[in-house]
Image (cartoon, rainbow over all chains, first blue to last red; front, side, top):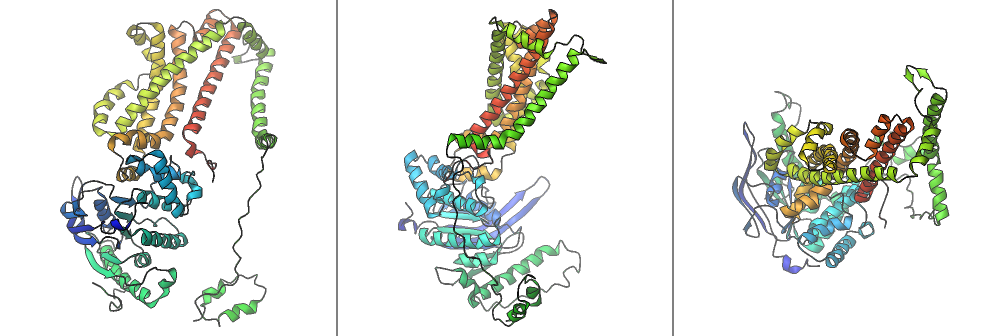
Length: 290
Length: 320
């Protein structure tokens, strides 16, 4: 496998004053406004925010599916134009090719890069083995559970040895129990591969459990509201989720997001609709907000 | 920490000792495991069908009811036909001149004494296959391009839409003038019949592709020139096969009509000629032959669909 230490220096994402505007026929909508963020090589960074805040839009821009209308977006110093093999993407809806077996799905990227058949079969088997999916290599995606599908999705994105992995709410469609197991699997795989990850989620526990750093985004138009460092030791275990440090972090993030959710709903609810809701923000001293 | 009231209520009633429910409230911690089943060891089910006899027996026990009902359904048709013609029923629809099943069967044996009948079948099948395969090749290719490229769509679809409402049979006179010989013109009419259902279903299939699949392919390094055949075609296959099934049906309708109007040879020509010669048994024989051929063709398409799209089979194919 080519995931080695030489990659630890690669995989640097840098966004500076990025703005993304969607043009419709009658108006234009600002989805993301002057966002600056960075992911260091080998770092796990989450982007969290209320729904519709533009966090997926931002990830799509890093993936190269959409062009930012303002600012600079670079991966390892190169400006992003279109999708590229340096960035693996894991989608929420699995996006496996239903007509290919599990192994053929994993092989697809390697095939597109011109790797010989036997070689790519071998590499796909190795990766599937790491994810505990080797015995399902000849199954079709529709024969797998949601958790297994998404493991295949992650393995497929990793197969071409990208420098960064972009994950767009990858566990959003899974049930709570499967989610927790998948988070553990991901954190284990990440620890082994030391690849940079930009992870989109709206699940606070998930963001804290997985990340080195968390960016909290505001309601639309999405801006960076806060940046938090998660100082929990690694390797992380589900037991840590009960620790006081973890709970303090959860409360901090929840308070930050709640403000934004209320802000974004203000337009939707009638005057006084928020009267009964507490807008009090919890203690922020408990965690280190940067 | 005390277990709250709703947790007490959630304790199953069939608990043999209600006292434990009360005792639980004394226990520290947010939850108490009342009962835990040890993790079951996976059991391997013995392979049921090890020999071919076993497989046959399993298949028969699974299939006997559908087969029985199928036989009953066809038997009922034959019986009704036989009774109606034997007693020359005359209830607004008249069975007086309709041949009996036995007469048709005799005719089948009679026509098979000369190779003419089989030649007619062979010629019809050849026309169908030629027209249908050209329609498949052209319909699927154009459909993929129209579905993928807006420019190509805007350029070609209006012209195709003009021709679409014209039934294949309406092409018969034009086709005879257009093509140098009669055989090609019949194949052309068959082609026209099959082409539009295949084209439209392919376009629809491409439009129905989940865009996230295309994104996934692009970021895995799939270049545009591979996109059409590696991603769009397999992703659209279920719709394409719907188009093929419909197209095959329309191809037969068009072929028989064309053969009846302008043909020499062919099963449609055979049926029409029988009418001209007042050979009633041959009319029925021709009709039944057309029915059987149509059935075989749609069966072949279903079989091809299952072979080309193994992932569509609900059963678990490809094991560990």
